[in-house]
Amino acid sequence: GFTKEAEMLSRRARLVAIDLAPINPRCRELSFPAQADATALPFKSGSFDAVFIFDVLEHIDADTRVLEELHRVLCPMGKLLVTVPAFQFLFGLQDEVSHHKRRYSKGSLKELVRGTGFEIDYATYFNTLLFPPIAAVRLFRRVFPADSEAGKSDFDMRLPGSIEAVLEKLFSCERHVVDRASLPFGISILCSARRV
Image (cartoon, rainbow, N blue to C red; front, top):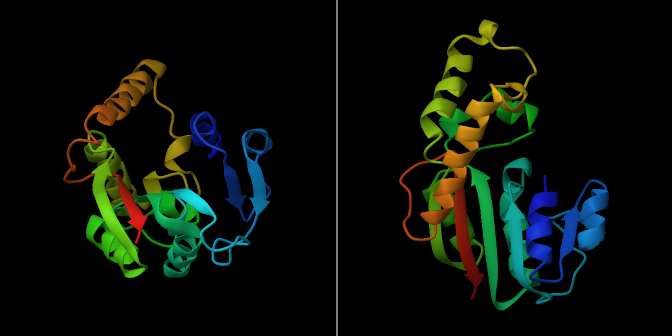
């Protein structure tokens, strides 16, 4: 999942890719790979200007410890960019298949980030336009589990190509709004903060 982000970021910065699992070969080409535990990073304090942690915190029991480590390895005024899944009431089969421990609200994420020494610059929900259909599918699967294919994730559900193209365009059009206005709800949350 990190490859697309790594390709984009590698054009602007020298990257270090960190994962507990072996690093994807394409990411190894784009960055310096480090197989490491996010709760005990093998780097000196103040080593990084920025940290991007996309859809990781929800996988780790000790999410507070991860943010404390990120605070430690960032230089003063270093930037943190976090994304996580939103709304615990949406927790379901997709989260279980993805090995998620939890989902967050914007308020709970901001409290967690602030509590580990960061100052928040900006926080918003995103994937707002697709929230109604995604929430409907998640809630339907909870109410009618027999109608769901056990062990299958949302990503295994295929729609006709033309519909998927429209949904992708709806999702991508939010990029024109998300940095200008904090959206009131969505499937995910973005938080930008800095070490103080």
